[in-house]
Image 1 (cartoon, each protein chain N blue to C red):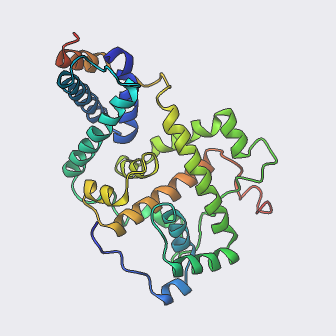
Image 2: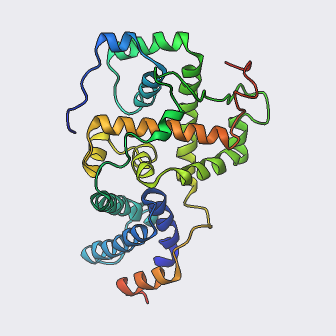
Image 3: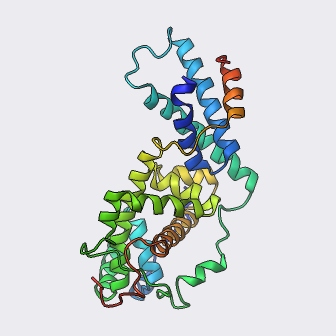
Length: 95
Length: 196
């Protein structure tokens, strides 16, 4: 991965706003946050009920997406078109 | 094999590729590769405990190939980082402009956990994923639905790590807001005192 993701400075973290905090809340599931990121995120969350709420909702969102992904196999609303089915069948010799 | 698994594989691919043509191509390539593998191992599928799982394993790689192709064809990053719509969510100082609505506590029929049990939350989610810009959705699904490592996603879309984090953040904030506005939980505008 290109290393253009510089470590945030103390000043940036001290002045963490909701946009930055919500991004870190999402990244917490994608990468291991730095200790100082975690510390200042926690401090921001202590004073920001909107970001606390956002963090909780991200957890539920992950559950929703996992269930949606699993269930998408079973829906019958989306199907291969007849043309595509014929083309694939011809290609693999099941025509 | 096509009759048994064709539609399911297509749904899997379409959810991630957001392109009918690309999804059909990925499914076709999957069946071709599956037949080639079977030919190399004697009789078809023998010893395979779950044919669907095996096919999905092949399809995952074909979907990533298609994503790489789509990314090359579209050119540039998956989403313009200066999209003006983003300004609707945060003000200049990075504070919430559209504050997250209330999804809890679990006291009413609007509680998302209850909606989840009834399937309503999943229906709303499907609508909101559908409404997400395709290029953004491709990145988002690869990470959130499949848990593909960030390093690999960056290579597939030829983007930097910073760009990826930004895109995922935008996708999450947009999706969360879409769920709000389509009736998941209750809007904070309606019940500002129900903060938790």
